[in-house]
Each structure stands twice: as C-alpha cells, then as structure tokens.
Image (cartoon, rainbow, N blue to C red):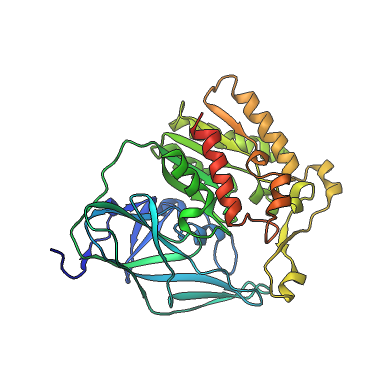
Length: 388
C-alpha cells in the first residue's frame, strides 16, 4: 500500500548532474561549478557575473529515484532574469521521465525575479513564494523516475516528496559524458530540460550526461579546465568559439595558445580519455563578422529578442575572430595535437548544424537553435561521437 507523499532528503545520492549542492535558508541549490571556482568568475557587471548566473541554472541536472510511487511532488523557488524593454524568456520546463520516457511536464510559478535595466546594467530583485509541482498517475510498480530541472532558470529545491519509499538509482555502468560549451550547449531555445541537444545526444548514445554548458561564458577559463581535469568521465567534449566571438574576448594571437593550454590541463587528468573538440555551429551574423554581439534594438522595439554582430569584417586581417577563423584554428590545433594524442578528435559544427539546416530551420533569435534544431544536433552528435 502507498500512503500520502512523504518528504525525501535532497542529497547527493538523488541529484545527478550537479557538481555541488549548497544548503540555503530555503532549501538546496544545485551548482554546476564548485565553490572555489565560483570565486574566480566575477566579470565586473553591475547585475552580477554571467557565469555565476548560468552555473546555477541546472542544465542537465535531474533528481533520480527508484520507486513504486505514483505521485511525486517538488516544492521549488525559481529565479529568472528579466530585462527591461525585452520580452520575457520562456518559463523553465520540468520534465519527468519514467524509465527514460517523458511522462509529464510542469512549470513553476512565483519565485524570484532579477529585473535588469540593459541601458545602465542596474538590477533589483523581486522575491516571490515557492511553487509546488505535482506529478500524479505515474505507472504502478518499481521504476526509475527522473525529474529534469529547467536549463534556463535557477531552481532552489525546497522539498521533495513521494507516496512510496524511494532509493537512489543504481549506477548502471553506462559511460559518463562531460560536455563543456556555450548557451547553445546549456540549451538556449530548446523546448524543455530533457530536449536540449546534449540531453538528446546522451539519450541517443546511452550515456550519463554532465552538462557544463554555460550561457555566454565558454571562455576557455583555466578553472573550468581544472574542473574537467579532476572530474571522472569516460567521454569529454568541448564546444568552442561562439562566446569568444560574440564577447570579442580574444584575438588570433591569444586564441590558439589558450586552446592548447586548456587541452593541456585536461590531459593532465585525462591523458587517454576520448576528447572531441567541437567547432561552432553555423551562425550567419558571426560567420565573417567579428563581435561584440549585442541585442538588436530594432527587434526589441518590436517586442522580439534578436542578436546582432557589431564588429568590422575588415579587422579580421588584424586578428579579430569570426566563426570561420575559429573553425580553421580548431581544425589546425586538433590535427597538430592528434599526431601524439590519438584520442583527440575534431567535430565540425557545420556537420551538426550548417547552412542547409539554417535554410530549413533558421535561428529564431539569430544566435540559438530552436527546439527541432536541438533535437537534430543531438542526434547527429550521438551518431558522430558515441557510435564511433
């Protein structure tokens, strides 16, 4: 027999895909960066560091239970960032999977909102209440239940309940895939938590995902290389380039040694682990035009979110980076290193999403793939990397 939902301690054994759990006044906050690394990522912005916000958005993080429960409940406080004058981003979607199949979805209400003035960078926080997500009518009998947390909003976990005893899902021996990348890897514009392209690739390739995709913040940071170096994994991949271009963060002279240094650090801890270097997906605004990227003000006036490139293509000769330049550099770096590193591979982002894909499924905001494109990229990545 089952009884009413009983509280379940939210501990590491039930949380998959986070590097650290922080105990807060309200509950548990999953982090995708450990505390020591979070002290190194401040970028000086008035509204707080981009990476500091992105790493608390739990892309790829899920609650995993083995249980006969037919009802599962989660109390959660979400945090969203809202830009004055820009349309709100879609609500985060919680995906509940039963034995690997999507069974239900929910969104949270209430929670906290960070209001940002894009013209000044100033921000203020509006606090709100926790929401309760209730999933009922789950199949009877013992099963694996995964509740994927949203990839695009912070989720502070207050209480988890089920109407039958729960146990951690046993380790199955599946390979662990650690992936690091940009907002595209975090899942921007994907339909839901379990349909970001890395989540689709992990399901297709039958691997356990650890997603270190950080919106706006794949900058070859040394502390991230050390995290990857020290984290057990069976397969590694790095999606490199788009943030460096739209952030106008490097020049040709600094980019190549930065990539080499990042790879050197990873190889200190993973000398023979298969490692795929993924070049940028197709993005017309930055193919031949350097950054910085910015919001398209004309689109904002029309109530649409869209991005634009502001650099001068003539300055590429002086060392400014574009996606075309970065693909050539990454291909050259991998070819050079693979002579003594046979487990290093190059994946051309144009093979995952190229000009023909853009003609069929254009980037809705000129920067990020839509939901169907995420699914396409995920399937292609799995075929390229996990089937080989």
